[in-house]
Image 1 (cartoon, rainbow over the protein chains, first blue to last red):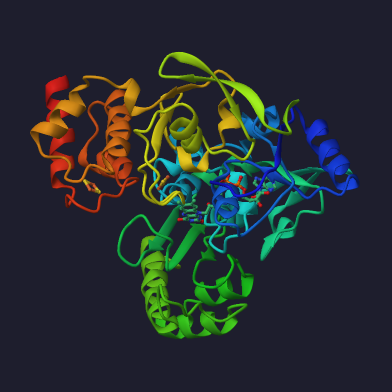
Image 2: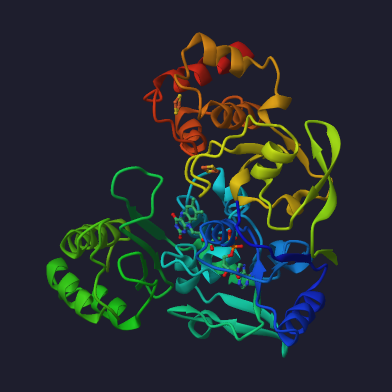
Length: 279
Length: 157
Ligand SMILES: Cc1cc2nc3c(=O)[nH]c(=O)nc-3n(C[C@H](O)[C@H](O)[C@H](O)COP(=O)(O)OP(=O)(O)OC[C@H]3O[C@@H](n4cnc5c(N)ncnc54)[C@H](O)[C@@H]3O)c2cc1C
Ligand code: FES
Ligand code: FES
């Protein structure tokens, strides 16, 4: 049972949602945008977080959009991960969504919730960091479209009162070669020890994004330059790549830093092999 | 805009019947089903999204009712609990194949397997595993559950 009360609103459009957030703020109420609820409800039940009001985004048409527009695929923030996997417009995206949580939970857990959530994994963002994805945000200043590199740095860079409406992915990226590696401790239904998504771009350079090995997902061009340097042996690459990590490798009860480092080496070698390196 | 600010009277469509019920916006569907509607098949296990004992169908999709607010389904959504699934083949084959021991996880497995059989009657082992690993059983070792699903698939052919 959730041991406190909150109000629940379900605005019908973007303007209503944004105005409501502002109104609640002016009234001194702590509100939060709500999507699948898997993080918000479980955190509320165990008393980790308290809110005065939830603003559910699931009646907003733009947040449910799922299709092709000109040369882009459009993914509404409130699509569930199963909906994304089932339509499978962008296979690397489906691959990143498919192992998150479990099948039943993925009927509820949304793309926007995963990438805007507070948990460190946020696996669904990995492919979006590799392609020139555009993020559409709505807030008190109106709507803005932001490139992936500016939309995300350790977390989604949303201003106060803003929410994610949709993500747009240029179709050309769905044609490129890709590989995805996700390592778990024991059971397949578990948070990963590491998750890497990789894509070979039009210039034959391999792009890689990392989740779960450190405290937040990241992609760094410096790391890709090392990885694509065909003069280096794989072990040298791994050493240099780890030295470029923005923060140390996680060391916790799920897996020691040494073990994750070992898995990283294996996973990078697997990606190099699958994507043909510089071949 | 729909707004629920206090205890509100909502209409929930459960097992084909529309039921009026007074709920707090903070009530989970699991608690409302069990404590307000007397439908106790869906079980509180972890209430954290991990075990699947609370699984119900919402518009034919399995959902963990411990993570769903009851106010979210006050819009004519069709909720089906195990009480609404009577005399199904999967219930029969769970009995035949010893798909349970203590039975605490069983309603969640049955509801999930029922949905799987409806959506993918010919599910292969990989797909069946993907769906059923949403549920945890602490007793059976899963073999009886797997066999029950297989037998149900054969009987439904
Ligand atoms: C059983 C279980 C297993 C899990 N396993 C994994 C896993 O394997 N890998 C993984 O990466 N994660 C996993 N998670 C974490 C889950 O993906 C995140 O908690 C995610 O936030 C849930 O999405 P949601 O739609 O349910 O979000 P909600 O609970 O609705 O919201 C979560 C947060 O995101 C914010 N938010 C939601 N939508 C938007 C939006 N459109 N714009 C701005 N902010 C928004 C909310 O304000 C809130 O802060 C798991 C969670 C559960 C319960
Ligand atoms: S009680 Fe809902 S998943 Fe465990
Ligand atoms: S039969 Fe006891 S938990 Fe599954």
